[in-house]
Figure 1: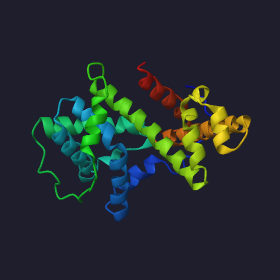
Figure 2: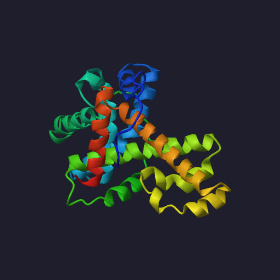
Figure 3: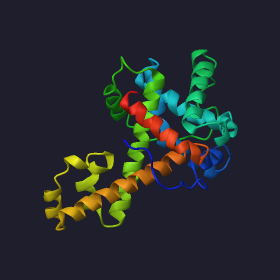
Figure 4: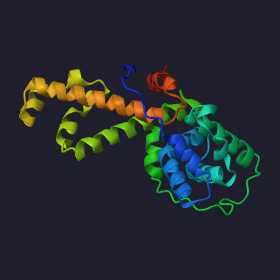
Length: 245
């Protein structure tokens, strides 16, 4: 997939702004941490499961990990200058599992920390994890793959919501395959007839949808890296992971 996306991402408000808010003792910090937990829970959970830890225990550990980020003020050490957000999270999780769990030195869960209420569909998470080739993926590769898939899902959801808000929900459903490079497989004559437009107009619509998808992907990736210069490299890296390279 072509990763040479046009446009310049807006780094004024990024995922790092959530990180910086999340380590402060405020209601805003709790909300920020909640957002971080809900967005990045599954890739971290997948990593813990690939370490050979049972599902319910992995669920508890993953949620406790986020609580500890606040309790230990770990987020205060995070900054864009110290690397990509996914690397920060994975390194922090590894440290947590080693120092707090595997050595049996963890305090009672919760530790007086403000509770984090997450609605987690563990059955769905397990079903998704079972689709991965366990014999081929290390815990680290599993995390990287699920991180990449998560970003693509977030982008697709944003695009779907954006199109629906613009009254273009039907167009999106008919043309969404084009956003991931499947335009050549779309039955454009039938789509054009259903939308009551010309075939050329349908093709142009698919092209605009794909372009907007790329813009949103670039924006989403920019939220997790330090500088605009890293965006293209990060996108290439994510697609290499998905391709098994």
